Length: 325
Image (cartoon, rainbow, N blue to C red; front, side, top):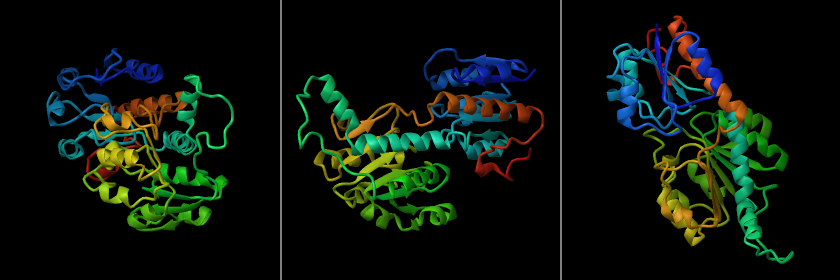
């Protein structure tokens, strides 16, 4: 019987799907496993259902000569050594598409929360400071009619941009490829990164993390933003220089930021924790009941497909045509 290692408890539907067919080894504790524990759990298994917090590298793969598939419970897969997996013929899958709309919703939630100082307002009320309406009480920034800059116009970036139509925003996007959907539906313009950063009132980041995008938004880019700019990141923390961002927010050289991801999760740069012009969330971009369930089912189905000799629909792009199925 095939053996499957699930590195952390996921929605029960997916666990049942696998237990009905295979021998399942499950981490029942609600915490991230250590590297040593992951290696132990992966010993002699045929499949690993991993989370984005699990580093699946050569050492983990060495734990089982039988390993055939790693199903990553996330759309990103920078936590997996894809090159090593490909070399060994191990199939790697992710969960694209499913969490697109949910993450786009959260990006807009952060945009509103930062622009209109929602979290500050809530805290203000709870601390008993509200004594009545005032003309200068917590003024924020208008969203309607402003310029929205999308860095990374893939599935999620596109979904975020499309939501701007109701706010009559001008959309600029930076991506390697032309986005016909955004240009046709919104009249969006493909521009250089520098132009997007200089002209945008709201900047939303949606690129994967790789060698090319590490610190794509560094000190130079941050100081080029408008003083009234609001920066949103729901992609990966290390795409931006977190320390440089914290300094800019502290100096008020940009207006605000909304972050769902961090450079060295779960750690957050200390300066950010002390600022009231940044909204911080614990990486919950895909955290709706419906989406997390669908992600789990897709991950489980990927493993079932591999064991049945079928090619999963969601093999990571790098491996397409490079792994023999």
